[in-house]
Image 1 (cartoon, rainbow, N blue to C red):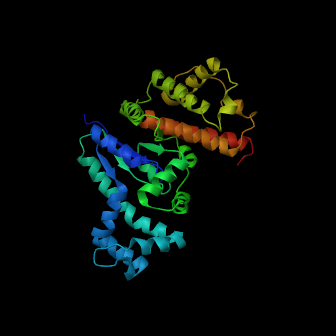
Image 2: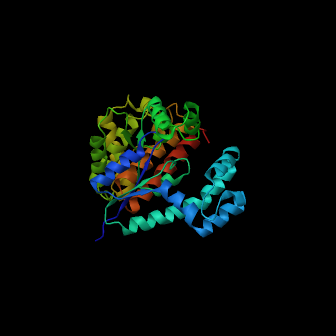
Image 3: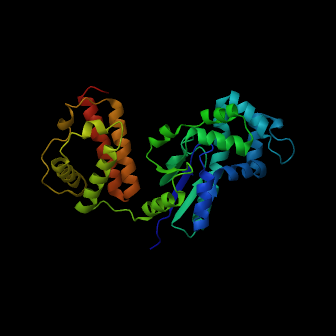
Length: 314
């Protein structure tokens, strides 16, 4: 049976070092697709794309038959953000099509895609996992000033047009710290090991026990949710949650507690439910596959919505 290939995005703010991480992965032997490089080739070589860009920005979008007027386009989209959205809608489907062909032609179980703005464009949803490369802000500024011959103000301006690392971390990506101190190869090898493990099918108690325990381990590390859970007696709580999800997913009996009523006394707000669902779904996607994954997501959504309704938060 053919193994499913995992599509892994590599992203990070300007100067973070995502290209360095990609180069290490390439030297190890993994296929790397560079979305930003492909986008540059597409705008200069794809005749259909060129026509659409000229229709959007006028004849000055190209200084010759093949030369894309990047400076001219950049000045327009900086002043008119809606034009940037339209430009992305022209280019990104073509890039995604090329990446999908790249994946199909690859013999590797892990295929990596380096791209600067996976979260900003919503493209992160097309990947099985995301690696976020980070570095201290001042380190990034100095790297970009040296590499791109930009002023400090110019680098900061570019940074301000990207999401912050904190915003990206909300989506629970794998993290690589590229600060010149933490060894990169050790971090990369650990992530590859995590990515290479086989997903469970979520069809027996052992799978469900792993789901519950891995979910709560993430909850206890989360700044938003951890205050609500650190006081819980997990020695008693986890078996009950495992019983509940066994009842939901594989029909075993033994769970009798009302899972919703247990939460009504907690000082929860809508954002707590949103974060709970986000972590729950991300944990499922990272570790499981099969029809019970969608059933678990649907039931979790129903529980969150019903509880919010009973607490008059909708």
